[in-house]
Image (cartoon, rainbow, N blue to C red; front, side, top):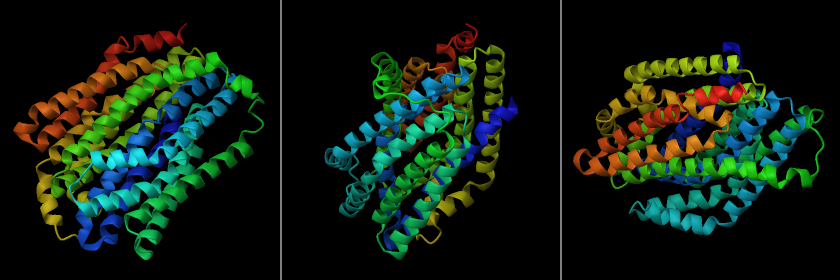
Length: 443
């Protein structure tokens, strides 16, 4: 079972880890490309990325819904159903991508108003970044569909290779456009467009070459079957609400950090440290969702219990490793991200010292939620995911606005830590301590 878990987890960890690393490199490129406005560029990039996180994360239901249903079809050896799931997910992803692109002006203008930094130069940077990167949105959403399908098919290698390729292209073109081409943040955004559309092309080619003989020929009428689409959207409607809450928390995290350039820069970099950990543990969440769906589809309750137990052990082990890394080397990692050439690096380090304790504590608080998310996705228990996220988000805002006036930025980090911890706790108890999930595989 450990081999099965690691077979899926390790490629996903490798592909996931490239995302925060890409963020770290993008931050370093932004600080260098914008010269004396380095701190302002880091903040502007953070806000620009937050806007796209709002778009992408609200579309992540496509990956989650596709993954769980495909994994169950794979476990039941239902070739027709996982063939249908591929087409359904791609059609939905393309439709959502076109809608998001068509609404770029109202989304962009509202985002700029809502995330107003009070600096005309910063707002201009954010606008340039947004209206360039928006061309990558349809591709990014299509990649959700592809990744969800491959995960459900127990294939973590192809998404890993494509993720590495996409991020290497992004980093390379970011340097070419932003520093060599002096395009600043707009160059980083343009690099994202090139990288993500390349990823879509590669995914399509891989499916044609590797899965053409395994996929069953299906008609459009069957793909758009109302009862099947209703189930797909029923699951996804819960995930949409869940994801909206997730995005709201992260958006208000960035919003609460604005007003002080040093606090915004420090919170951005510290959040990247947490993201580095989260993408590691998310690899085991992917393993949990793929294997949970597979064992439920195969009605193998014994394997399901072993899988869940071992995934939890792996996540806690990773958490303790990161706690040690953060205690010993957080200054080195922070300096690497912030760029020591910035004139205010010592000031940023001084500010960060006041909040680094939260980053050290979060890995332990956040170990359980990642695996629980994966279990619920694989079991298609989207309602539990939705309800647990709603209550966790309520707790986040209560702590943030209840204590913000008393302990300042510490209230933000306390709220975020409790939000992560409660997600796992709520899901555990809402599933009757996972007994509901086990019963699903024993029917």
